[in-house]
Image 1 (cartoon, helix red, strand yellow):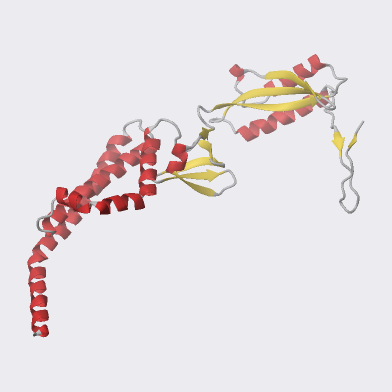
Image 2 (cartoon, helix red, strand yellow):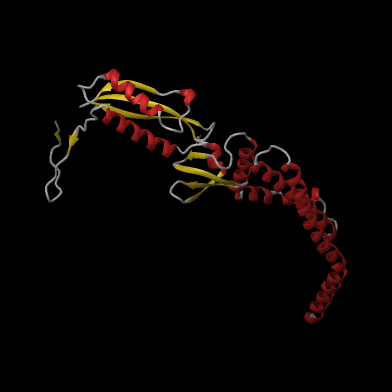
Length: 287
């Protein structure tokens, strides 16, 4: 058997086939280039149309991404039709068979996060810039993509959460609707005038800038502590205009200064003494 002859004929046949496919390949390359240009133009067009609407920014990005993906799918299918003789979309789907099932299982997490990302963008809640608490992570939402959500924690670290985790678990949106109620426990000594103490605390908190005046300030006597009568103090802040940390700081300062001015004691219940070897002993009550 002339193996060299058989190999020569096979190589010549492959060469002729490659030469015959050159025009189709050239058309396919040109079509891919046209697809890229059309996709870029479609993204700009959809960006211009959605830019004049009141749609949230992450939903605008979703529309642009889906538009680009759709254009590329159509372009690639056209290229396959030209380059591969007899190729049809129905034949491709039928030919995948068990392979499609295997691919589905292999990319299950990717598809799940993709679908979760679409649903997150479609619902009204959780926008870019919101402060959230999710799965032990609290911070500001910086970016929402089709697969993941970027959360910048208050300590500065960037945490990337899969969209499926956010979609399937409870998420606390701290900045929705933007008005929040805060509270603080304040103790006064047992020999203090409770009515006076209550009024002093209320006036002190009400004098702080940044509070929502229409919500008012609540001061309730709550319980008998170990060495004090404890008041629950509550106030409201619009976090979209004021820093909750700054307002909370000012409230603590105002209460302390007002109680000192009224000569109302804030008792300190216990003090702990230690030896030089840092061995703790029993806590003793102060006078």
